[in-house]
Amino acid sequence: MPLGLRSKKKDKSKETSKLVESEAAAPAPPAAAVSASRLQFHTQLAHGSPTGRVGGFSSARELYAKIAEAFDIDPAEIMFCTLNTHKADMDKLLGAQIGLEDFIFAHIKGQRKEVEVLKTNEVLGLTITDNGTGCAFIKRIKEGSLMDQTKIVCVGDHIETINGKNVSDCRHYEVAKMLKDLEKGQVFKLKLIEPMKAFEKLEPRSKGGTLSEAKISRGRETLRLRTKGPATVEEMPTEVEEKAIKKVDELLETYMGIRDIELAATMVEAGRDKKNPDEFAVALDETLGDFAFPDEFVFDVWGAIGDAKQGRLE
Image (tube, rainbow, N blue to C red):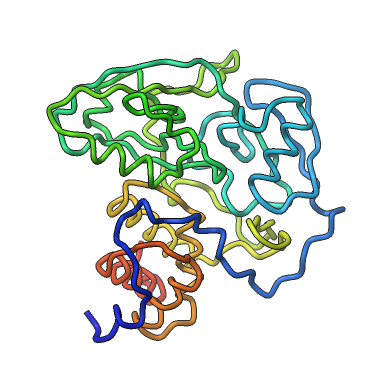
């Protein structure tokens, strides 16, 4: 551990309950603001609907509001969006970037279901993500895990309550921590909401995928959504950045039990021109506010960025 890392970082609690939205503090890169006329996208409800058009948004929350207005539904009914497919494909989730030619499919809440599970293992085998507006859902189920044996629980399910506690407005890291903290040997109860299904049945036991399995187009512009400030047009990440983002996303799952490509991309961006872990740690403080990342995680992320730059990542 390099000397002075913690002294350069702000005094913070290590409790994940202190975490804040990563995108809220992310600085805008030097890119021109997108004009309203260019912010036009085709959209449909994933289970079937006429085609609508949405535009004039700068964040995921504003996008969901626009989609809800187009189809006369409550924005809270939208669980997540996928790009260029109506299926609940975890490789095609809408994140912070949208290709200017992408077609947006909104997945809305469908059937509710309940399940009781005896926690026989410390690790449940769930990876949690969210839509950035307070809807945490299951992105991956580890094969052979406890939850993989619980067939009612599926990829794409929104976790509504844990033992009667409503977690609908919680971020993914909060939900992941609650699940991790459940006592081994005790029965716990989940209330879930699955995405509304079309005539073609979704693949319910899909384990979810990773960035490496998704086909990412290069050499084309994307719209970067932001919580604060206008949306901007940027180039797609380079191959080196893609590899670094994939590895950081895997580290997020290892350390925090979440998957978040947007957060991973923000961390890679923060380390783009840094010379050592100390500078990187300070940059994370500046860009991600009160995220209580442990030193071990920061070093592993710094190492992943360095490995990607040196061509050591596959």
